[in-house]
Image (tube, rainbow, N blue to C red):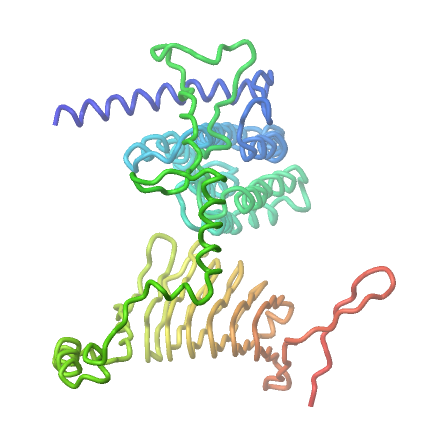
Length: 484
């Protein structure tokens, strides 16, 4: 027990030193530029890209927050500190291999503390005139937790950023025609998350890219010696061990590589034996008839006795049996901000009515089922479903259908975008309020959009085949004519 407490104390002390040293590294790299980036400094390319994001997008948001002032400026300072903590973690990850889970949780602790600080400030200032501003930040700042998400950190950031939409829309509604500074503030804040998604997609598609053999060397500060005493508090890790020696051919203990002369002599001897002609059979032993199995019945009986096992021992050829399909229990529950509708089969009346704008719905592997989502929700994802019917009121983000078959969707209210990917058979019934909805499709077939017309619906197929041609200056793509 004492050893465990001792280990935890050492880990906490290491994290404290890490925060101190890396925060200085952040200030020097962005301010005085004392750290040598790029090839000479050995810093990972994704650190340079993250620094670029901070200096461009984050600085623009901080500038606009300072112009508004008050609670917005105070909150922005906390957001800046949260991004500094995130940068410290990324720098650590670029120089170290992935640590054990317990140690990683301690290293992530500064980020979670900054997020909690931002959300607590909103709760303590509910009477603020800038409450919508504070709420937009507080609802979306958990997106910084993408560093602990795998294998889809990018979609997680999008999900958290979408949670700010309700409050940023309120800010735009209140100030759009009266104060452009708040409009600029909204644009600069939302661009942070859109830029972060692009950054993650390029450098951390399925999770944090921990140090590898290329970028394991830590950055070297100008005027700072490469080697420091282990007790000086430096966070630089020791240089990586030298690579293993090149792999040699596998030889047994009694074998050794032959020289070219030995190999040449072996080949000469082989060809000499082959060129003997009829003499090559001179050393063969003559076999009499009584020693030949096909001419001696006694030998045939012995051979069949020794060679043929009984039927009970003869393995009969059988076709491999497919493993039984694993059955999962159906799920319909709210997990945090996500409604999980999973493994439902043959249910025709599932209803989700206690919804909020910041919530999302994830419908996974449902079959012969209908789901009705009431109220206004952030987004809906349909994944790996068969013969599913979905009815919903309003979605402020996007409805996505992926890897599914025979899906019918009915929109009661509004939805800005519906995305259909890798799906065969999808019918979308739009309402009068959602006529301007954008339909994005890829690798899908049998898609039809039905729009209201004279009290009924009029059906329009979505093109599946396209024709591309060169018009002299660029490629032009248009739907191919349907072949009868």
